[in-house]
Length: 377
Ligand SMILES: *Cc1c(COP(=O)(O)O)cnc(C)c1O
Image (tube, rainbow, N blue to C red; front, top):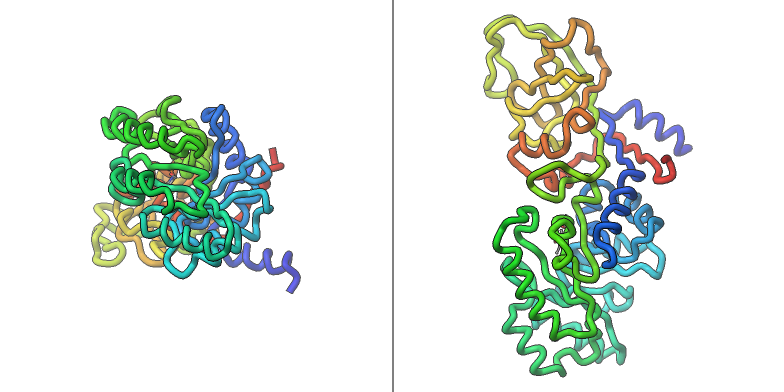
């Protein structure tokens, strides 16, 4: 079938519209580049570009000048590669599982080596191929998640043959508490990173995530690695969000009704009407990435009017209290806003007891996805 026809059918059939503003994404990248200067800024595009679609996000960032792309898993690197030109560098944060080294080398993808075992495997691959292979080395400076411990860095430097055939392009670490600028883990991690960094004189330093870019010059290193801020999420836990919103989510009304006082609403009858209420049922639920923790807690908006969620979030639907609207305002097919100008990503995340990252990466596949082109501004 003709793809335009297909798109028309999909757009009429979808339960809601997820609009992804690539112009805002590019503006956010440009803002981060300015803030990180003279350091360069990579882009973290793991988890399908935080749920927004790496096939659209990566080319937009490439065209905005980004040349370094971080993913978490090697399989994501494989899937990303076709969307980038050969002068872009793809780095795999979680490093390689045994057996993928030859594929990684053949594709020119750069692993982040997180353990001496991964160093050994990558060096063996390089020697077997008779080539020098690029790598990043991650050091654990206090998060206890991924990376060599400082003592293992000592081992590596004392026995340089362990790195035979490996060119260490980047030395990196990751902040555990960067979104809390006053947290004393930040200077502690920075101190450890600076000590290690001096011992890899030729490598570039990559340290700051989105939050790190806002912590001041010391934290920037040579190559920042922003993720969430690109996608419009607030880089810091407190204060105004300086990033432009990238995501807007609108969901369709599939039924409206008026219920009497005493009516039980939703699974488990967790909400009972205390007076007559007008309700609207909308066509998205936890299977579409609207967490069940929003039950009796979150809201949608119609214009400026807040429409509280009543009862439990179901798999495919949510019931809203629309009593605040004039009767008949919402009809079958009307759209209400879940994320947008009246309700930020952070508000939805807070209502759901989670973080913006989890809301974005959970956004469902049943919405129509509309990408606003980077050239639209
Ligand atoms: C996810 C991730 C990032 C990006 O972090 P944001 O807080 O989204 O900017 C950077 N570095 C590493 C190692 C990560 O895992």
